Length: 432
Image (tube, rainbow, N blue to C red; front, side, top):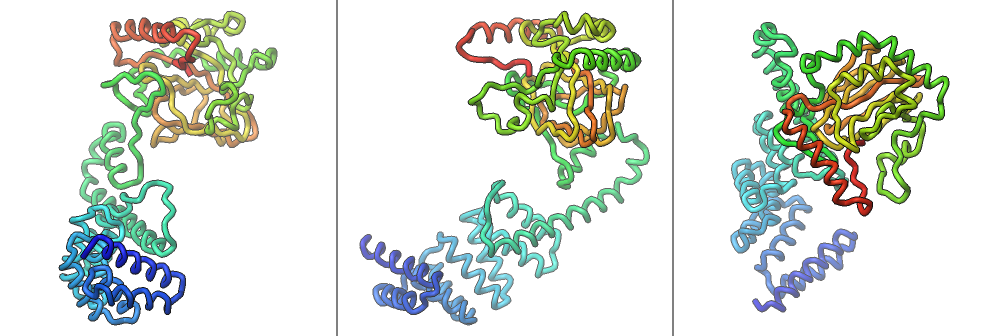
C-alpha cells in the first residue's frame, strides 16, 4: 500500500471515529464502509469493525477481527488492548492476560492495560497481586492530571484496593513485629518505623531542599535529638526571663516589629502572597544577617547573654540571625524550605495559646512553652496559629553539629565571597 493510500485509510477511520463520538452513526458507517472498500484487511479497519461489534455485544466476532489485526500489526498496543477487552467479555482469562501482557511489553506504563490487568487479578482471587498492579497504575498518573470521567470509577477502585491492601499489610506486619516493638523504645525504632510508614503510604520521606547552599553527607533529620544540643537546657531554664524581655519590648516598641516576609514587588512569590510585607508574621530582631541589633539586644540582656554563649551559625553578612517571632491569630505560614542545611533552627516557645502547631516533613508537633527543639528548615515545613491571640517564640540558628571546624571556616569564607563576587548586580539570599 502506498503512503498516500495509507494516509487516506487512516484519515477515513479517524473521521469515522469522530463521527461516532458525535452520535453521527450513519456518517460513521459511511466513512468506515469506504475505508473497508479500499482495504478490508487493514488493521485499523478491522479494529473499527471490531469495536462496532463489541458495542453490539458480539464479542466473539470482535475477537476474530482483532486477532487478525494484531497479527498484521503486533506492535500496536491499542489493538492488543481492544483484543483483551473482547476476551474479557468472553471470560477467556488466560488469553486476556496474554493480550494485556502484549500491551505492557510495548508500553509498560499503559494506564488502561494496568487497570484491566489488576481487575483480571481480582477476578482470579489474587487481591494482593491486584493491589500491587493498581499501585503501579496510580503511579503512572502525574500529579494534577485531569482524568476522563470514564476513568474516575476505575481510579477510585484502584485507590480503594491499594488502601485496603496497605491496611491489611500493616496489620500483618504489626502482628509479626509485636515482640520487637515490645522490647524497644519508640526512639530506638524511629527510623525503621518511618521507613515502614512510608512503604505503607501513611507517611512521606522528605529530603532537604536548600534554596542556597546544600552541604552533602549531613544527617537530614526533621527534628534533631536533644542530646546533640546540651546547651538548650540553659535557654529553657531562662524561659520566664526571656519571655518577660520579649513581652516588655513588644509593649514598649511595637514599631520594632517588622514583617518577616518582605520581598520587593515584582517577584514570583505566590506562596508568600498573603504574608509578604504583613505583620501577621512579624519579627523583633536581636541579630540579623550576622549583625547585632544593639538597640534591641541591649534591651534583652538575658536573652542576648545566652545567645552570646550558644554555638550560633556565624557567617559574616548572613548569620547569626535571632529574633522573637510573632505569629498573629488565625494565621498560617505556608510550606517552605530554608537556605542551607549547614545550619539548623532553634525554637524556644514563649507564648503558645491552644491551637498552635508546627510541621517539619512528615512530623507535626505542638509547641510547649519552655521546651525547645532544633530542626532542619531545609526540609519542607509550615506553622499554624488557629487561636484568637498571637503566638511568640525565640528563633535563632545554630551550626549543624556534624560540621567540623574546617568546614565551618570554609563556609564562613565562601558564602561572603559569593556575595562579594556578585556585589550589587545580583541579590544573594543566604540567610532567610
